[in-house]
Length: 94
Image (tube, helix red, strand yellow):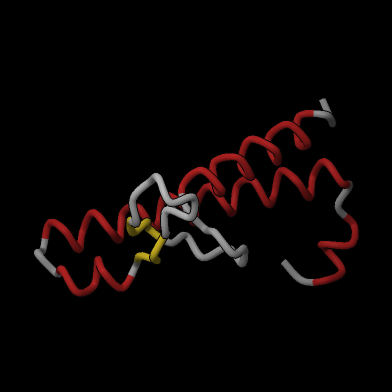
């Protein structure tokens, strides 16, 4: 899709396009992680994570799968919440 096509989209259609592409991206990352685990490519799995420190002194430090969507915390709930938001926006056209 080029810039002229993007500029023709209504806000709802743009949200729908973003929803579909983000959903495809998340599923692709999950498939890549799954395949790396199935093939015992541990370094590849580690390379697809980011450190998530406890932050409050009570939790534990952990690593999360990175979905790399350009936010400071690209973990599963960041992308799921964005998907829900886009889905709601896209449905407003109906």
